[in-house]
Image (cartoon, rainbow over all chains, first blue to last red; front, side, top):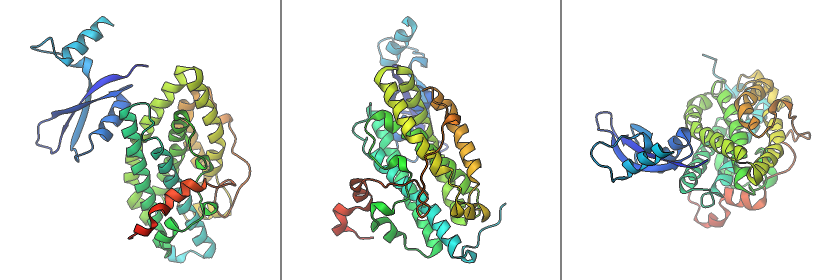
Length: 76
Length: 262
């Protein structure tokens, strides 16, 4: 079972914007949640989300990490 | 809402039974934290090591909170935490030795941590007021432990080869001890059930089997067909034996005792 890349988004307070704070490698959604919560624990986050990188749809660039992940997934 | 236990109303046997219950939970949490901490730098990935570190911290924090419940019995938890010999520890037998490999630690996540969470869930719904207040937050943190344990168990079980073999061996070694610990049905255990502090042994074991059945089945282990270890130490509420001396030295903080400021 290969690990996948998940991007981590969080906000500190209810009214804040959800921002990208990093990424984790994980086997599946459940492990990604654990890894994200324990890795990025420097704040008391109001909300944290993870999204598998291949689910992100690039809009204006095809040379970044998100586009590369998408292309690799399309070829699988 | 269940009535609150008046601890002062317990007789001597009841007080000893409550002390034993608190120690079986707190000592197991403390030892599990030690076993997790052994793998901070040896886990299969950085993220998993960080998660294991977080779980070790959780377990030590939980242990501290459960030890503090001894104050309900006018027992000083500081002495209990720092001055006992290994032979006095009431931790579940499956934690007596260090985990020889990652597969064994994963088995402990599912079985030992799972049994502790099962017991604590019942404890939180019982009549001891301090448990009602403190345990629910522990149970919320334990959800992450369960997720990580189940995911790794699945991965190792499905990988075959040595990983699966080690997982099966660790599960078969730990499960009988865990069932014996959780299924304690002697006089002190029944006293706590009668006082409404925790649910009866058969309910706890049944809830535990439900919790882990599908997970251990991935390694072709039948939790319903596994029986508890024989042999019982009623004074401590566990199977005979004790944790290794080195682990208890770390638990007590012997190395830095000169710096002890609590």
